[in-house]
Length: 471
Image (cartoon, rainbow, N blue to C red):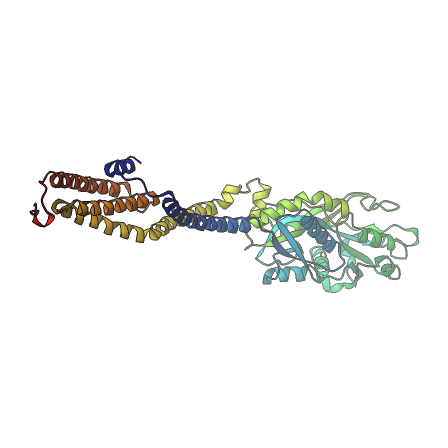
């Protein structure tokens, strides 16, 4: 502003008309507006992209089966709860024929999560997220008839007919382990499998020597099967596994456990004494390749919805944290372990890379914007450079002018150069250093004009044609 005032005082010329100045200022503002809008659009796009990527709902495919099972109902309830709460993780159930097929879908990559039995040969991709429940092996001899009191140990099942509740092959494999570890060759018994639906009617007409059911201790299916085999008012005999500890040591998926007296709350409560057996987990598992952040979010939502699931399915779900020890039968997923151990990453831990990346991108965009603004003013700078050269050309011409009219014409041209220079400075096309150089040139031109006018005015009056050339 000081230089601008100095130019105005030096030439005694008014600043350009308000309308012209306003038009040039408007053009400058328009150019800057374009740059600013471009930057804001870029920033908005980056911010929106990061926000969408971070906050978008993630849908995970979960394999569960068989159809109409409590496991499917539990997963469907979780799916509805997550959707109702607008949770970050959503579920898309894939109903399979059973836990074996669910594990296969996880291994093939067709599912991200699965509900599986812990005693299956799980794929290496599977890592534990949570216990859905504990399953207990319940082995008993029906009451009534000539068999009463004859079978009291597992070893006495050799050559007998055993009914297995459930069509899954996994229950038969479990029976073979129990028999083999108790000294009974599995091929020495006859196995008859029953569906889990309509179990009471299916068992009433059967005359088998023993039965095996696998499920949670509060399973209605197991309780109904026991009741259906209590014939003629005689109570069934529950078989304890003397080799439970040995089985647990040999097979990591199994643990030695006890069935407390009166667990199966029917009339009368059964068993009448504590029974030793084995149990194993029914797990939520995730693919190892699934990100820790995603699994941690799913685990957090799962345990948040646990109370709702327990109230809806008390016989099917008892969600618990998995074993986080390094020697666990199923290794825990790092994301689930982080949530369980309270080491889940904070927002900055998770997204600091994105934040710094966004800052770097914004910095680059700022540089691009500055370059773009300079590019828009390129022509203006070029024009101003030519005007400066013109001013330097007029300096020696002013010293040799022979008439006041010539000096006035050069003065008017210099006024225009001054006006355009000031506008370039206001638009940011030239810097203060360039404006200072102009001020020096203008001052020299002003002095030259003033000196020449003084000389011409003091010359004696004579005809213009006879006036000598003054060097």
